[in-house]
Length: 485
Image 1 (tube, one colour):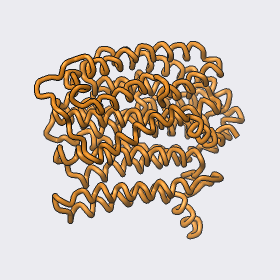
Image 2: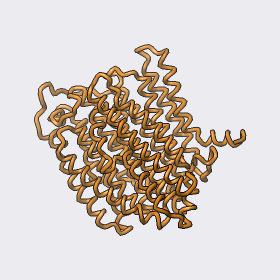
Image 3: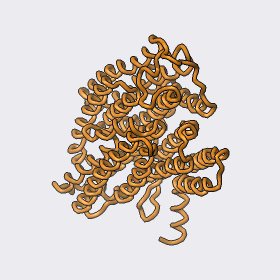
Image 4: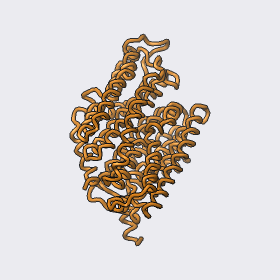
């Protein structure tokens, strides 16, 4: 690779490198900060992410391959880059009070969030299965450590250990899938895979490799039956980390699924083999996720199973193999980012007075002691359930419309029915807040200015995407157009 090509590649990946360098700067800066000046870690992180967001938006345009065709910069990657940076910004805002309250090393924490975000971004830009594997491992290692950040708590360490062990197995399976695909086709470049498969170059070995890739990525999405890690890890990890993990790795996994299966294995003959598998995964994920959430006694664990169910809704659109389905996935991931991070932000605030397991009783009478906080939580519960005029309603509408348009009527019906089931456990949260008396010691909760900013952004995002869904959907449709060109 000559100097000009290297500079072009570096410029194309400027957003990724900016986030990575910002994480390294925070690690170095933290060595010289006093306890009173630790807030500078957050400031540096937010400035770096804002700069990376601007650089990502500037990459919008014609697709181009960089770094020996290992990475690609196109509208699809730009959309995901912006989404990942948004998730990281909201996570930093969510974590500001949490880090101080829990006396966590802020430099280490924010650096890990940024390193994981770097992994997300390289997943979206991966044009080669090997690059995709390295990006997934980058984000996985960072999230393993984040899950066990409460080193003095057995639940947190147990969550990190389970996540690491099962994650290692899924990574090995995914890598074996890459090796199998290489053995069947002779290369790992996604564009070359598409060209070879389009010529009808199929074999049992190739289909076996594709199956292994589904298993590896299914773990990252927490799709049933690869979801076993999610409830315990989400419940045991610090709440701010759970919020980050519920949105970031899930969106990254769907970016990988779109790259690999829409772009690499989108040929009609191969798609006819994996689409029914995805349909079964979608149905199982929606059913088990929602039914399991009904029986939970912890709001945090309930939201963990809810996250599994929402992965199932996005899987419905993945089955459709058309532009509306692909665009609705992008829309749904952004909508879920606002809804999920907003709900977890409320959990971090209430946890100041409640216990860390987030029992429903911690929220008894919240409408009496903290009416604004209860109203905000109510909005997020309605949005996650899919009530209009929220982003959750618009997201589910587009997903199920894509399924109906493609003839997956049964899948759409299952999605609607499971959404009705979800209403019961989301409404239960609202009932506890408004119809039960406050517990002992119930008093107004002080919300920091940073947390108020986060709640304001997530509320506005949830409402804007519900009332004016067209702008984000149109952007998503332009981003996925290259997959069908």
